[in-house]
Image 1 (spheres, rainbow, N blue to C red):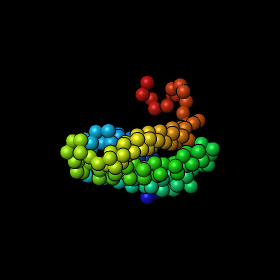
Image 2: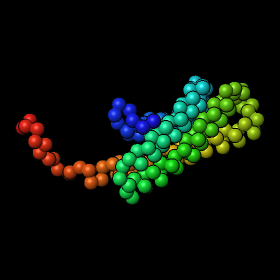
Image 3: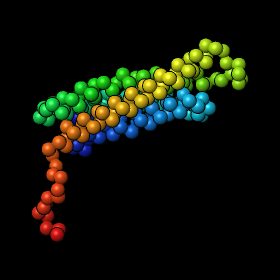
Image 4: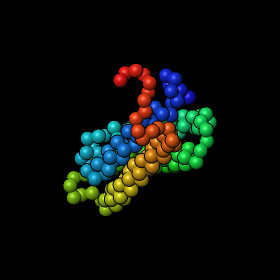
Length: 167
C-alpha cells in the first residue's frame, strides 16, 4: 500500500498502531489481572491482538515505501530503526492474549485450581504486564521519533503572515 486518497498510507496507518497497541495492552493486562474480565471479553481479546498484530506490518511496509521517497536524515533513520523493533512486542501481546483467553475459558471452582494452572496464570500475568509496558513504551518512542523526523525544522515557533488577506 502506497497512498490513500493522495496521502502516503504510512501517515494514516500509524494511527491504527498508535490506538490499537495501547488498547490491546490495556485489555491484556486487565484480563490477566482480572480473569472474570477476560472471560467477559472472550474471543475479543485475542482477536483484538490479532488485528493489532496485522496493523504493524501494514504500517511498517507503508513506512518503508515512504522512506524511499523522502530525503534521508538521521532522524528518519532513527525512526525506521525503532519502527523495526515493534513487531516482537506485538507478537508477544498476541501470544499472551491467546494464553489469557485459553486459561480463563474454563475456570475450576474457587480454590480447586491445580498448582500448575496457578503457576501459568501468575507467569502470564507478569509477562503480560512486562510485554504490555514494553509495547506501549516502544510505540511512544517510535511515534516521538517519527514526529521529530517529520516536523523538525518544518515549522516556525511564531505565527507567520500567510498572506491570505483574512486579517
